[in-house]
Length: 201
Image 1 (cartoon, rainbow, N blue to C red):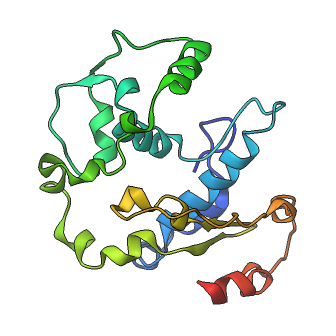
Image 2 (image 1 turned 90 degrees about the vertical axis):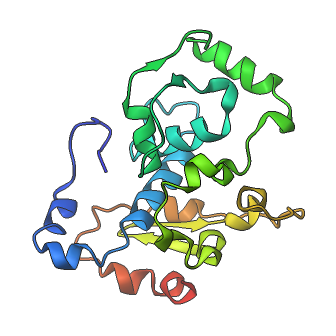
Image 3 (image 1 turned 30 degrees about the vertical axis):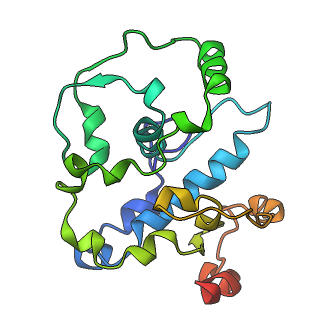
């Protein structure tokens, strides 16, 4: 997970790779999502100029759902699905300026949003069967804990994405105070610090 420079990674992540067998037992996806969620929250501030985290994941999510912003790619689907956008793509007919993209987003109807893109048989066939063993795990509402970061994975607010009927969602948890906690709080026992959220998980 790069920092704001987009080309540096904090040493704490490299230390997790010293023992590869142990690294495979870690929930890397939770760490990536927790960081991305917190950064997206911070990106709503007008003064924010940069964002860190796995933006290619966010971009892939959007390109599978916002068909009107998707570049033309002639490459077949592969797994992981994010690799589809690593190939030559045509951006012809797509707006280039941020203002035009915002206008295009504002003009779209709900019907033009693809809620369940992975139902496409051409996509499902490349996803390993192990990911379909327990699909209930896809939409569980849990806390994502990553060092000084805690974010809620509030899948109950996007149930249509999982093929369910979406009721009016309850208000999201407000974690503004948690966003002020800094990783530079040295010698912090993070599992103990976030024990409440880890228990929920």
